[in-house]
Image (cartoon, rainbow, N blue to C red):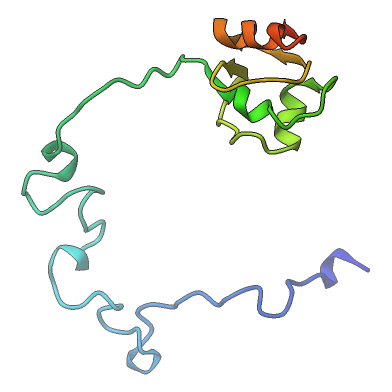
Amino acid sequence: MRIDTLSPAEGATKRTKRLGRGIGSGHGKTSCKGHKGQWARSGGGVRPGFEGGQMPYARRIPKRGFHNKWATHYTIINISQLADVPAGTVVDWEYVTENSLTKSVKNSVGLKVLGNGELKAALTVKAAKFSETAKSAIEAAGGKAEIVE
């Protein structure tokens, strides 16, 4: 095999549209741009979001809220989701994602456990954050709540 014999796979490439090459080509004379007007000119057209002079959508709708780009996002899990986990299990980020106990959050920095529900089995739960009720519920069931950085 030589580099000069390599070629793309069959059907992988398309020929470029050759504009302005005569009437017979089907793309001649005005080069598929019609007659005159803003879109027929070189560099013609309007900027993205331009709505012909009316008040643009981005300015018509009300602005509310604030998006903090430095906020820390945690993947949330409740005690009720750990009710079916067998006793003695170590519940951490890997266990939660492997068993699909919660939807993962984009740019999540760790796991946060909340205290909604009841826990009967003694578990070792490793998470970045715990609510007070979650921590007390885990310890009341005989388990351990360990904070992981």
